[in-house]
Length: 80
Ligand SMILES: [Zn+2]
Image 1 (cartoon, rainbow, N blue to C red):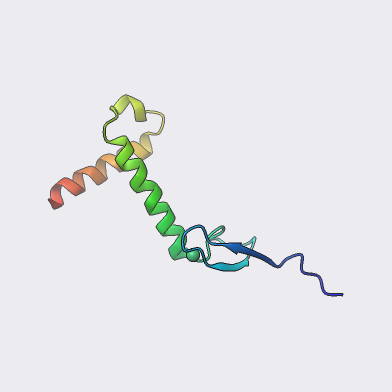
Image 2 (image 1 turned 180 degrees about the vertical axis):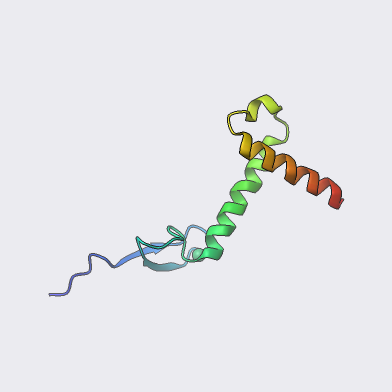
C-alpha cells in the first residue's frame, strides 16, 4: 500500500497553479519565491495606498513599517 500522506496538491494563491505542497518549503503557501514576493508586494502596495490618508498616529504601532513607508514615499516623490 502506498502512502500519500505527504502528497498534497495546493493552489498557489498568486498564480493559481496547482503544485505539490511541501510543508518544509520556504515559499509556502506559494509555489515559488517569485509568487511569494509578488504577494508580499501586493500587500505592501495595498498598505501603502491605504496608509496615505492616515496620520502618523495611526501607524505608530508599527514604527518599522511606518519608516519603510515614509522612505518609499520619499523615493517615489524623488522619482517624479
Ligand atoms: Zn505561484
